[in-house]
Length: 285
Image (tube, rainbow, N blue to C red; front, side):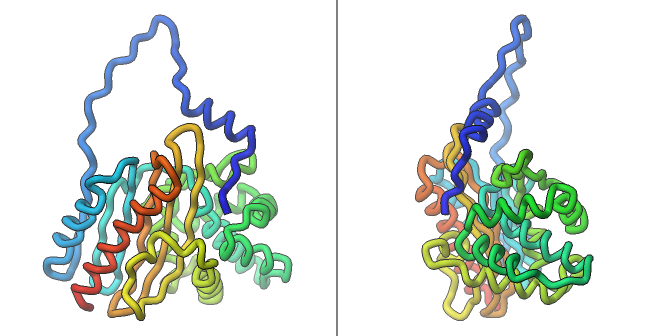
């Protein structure tokens, strides 16, 4: 479901995006920044070079600002591009909302209520915004920030005034979250991790685009996508996913903005995902 931006948020978007001119002050022209390049490392011979080349090629003709994260436990492979660039989260933040709820429930030694189960399922599998707003309000910023701190997601800034879709996220922090969901740790219980993965594996068919695209048969997928149009940077289109099989255990985050349409952003993400799945499959375990 598209994250509808309330009028107040649209005004906010315009205000944030607009330049404020102060008479009498002349800003120096910024130096031209070097275009960030894809950086990869791997314990598997030749894999980092192949991934770097293929991800770079997949993005060569794509417009917008694109950030990428890949981590494969099996081959100790990492790829990053613009890993610290902040993006409006759109609905990708819903995984963080669910993780916060489960983290807080564990602290209080309780199970989720029947109402919370209904809300969390709608929030993740259908990307239901009303359910998300209800849970966001129930948790409050103190608990959300508490989870972010416990998870080491230091660059994630929760959206103010209930605008969870304007939470600022980075590839680095989203990859940290996906790592927590997919391996034993002290932040999320095994039951909590299993529940998050279960819901991410039940996303409705119309929302299974993005990072799962091009995965080999036999590789399991868990995904959450986000999409939001604002007056600045056009469409934000994001996808986070975890994958297991074929001798690999990996997670992919692709964040984008500056897309002319939602479909343009989806195509960009899927171009990246396709080469990642292909290169990992070809590399063997």
